[in-house]
Image 1 (tube, rainbow, N blue to C red):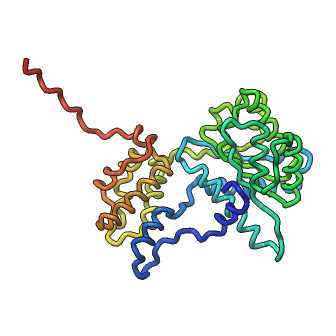
Image 2 (spheres, rainbow, N blue to C red):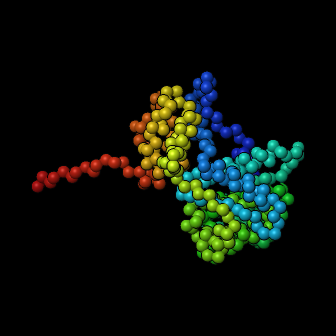
Length: 326
């Protein structure tokens, strides 16, 4: 995904499609592959991000004096940050493609991962790699930066998505240089920048003078866990119902998963990634064991990611130790 060719393939790939009413049953292998990929549900975070990205791209279109306003997508692990980032990037890419004239070879979106222990040079190298800009070990950071800024401007990059921003540590010398490099890039490339990372506001990224500069330019979108109830709505139950509606199982009873909303919320701590994984794994297991439906016992039998399992504690009384025979 971190090269333009790979991102373009992702953007243009047909999304997984749920079965249509009256459609002939799909083969087992096709249904297994479908549940492995599965649909992307438009969560509140995706909707908020799409809306704000569109607004900020318009706001910054004619701004040339200072860096354009940016966005930060933050939240705990497995809450859908990367999914939100990629979906907004795909929407922007496809919108540009529909409007583009024949022969237009501009690049509307760039997607870059911050490497572990990022330095200014390694971060610059990742930006260069996305567009296939030649980089050699002898090149200085300034030389790579010049090539990146020139090429990104020449191909018309309008949206830059930077994932794993929490890996940036301005408290270290190399991390501080990387943060300064990124700030310099935002002022030299005419694009809207969107960052995503785990609990960014509590990380080193928001500390000190450099953190204040980023916080002063960026709006925040929280991809936290979904609440079981928000006023009159039940957003987590609504998400479960949307995922259930997309299942391709021959004997599953519609409405059975929303009735397990309390259990599923406790099991996943309201994290979208954990919920999606649990339902997808259960669907695959239901196909493999020929039951073709998801039940509470089946869900109980599936081991989730360690974060979710650490949160979930089955409420079973501890066994009493047997009295000593001595």
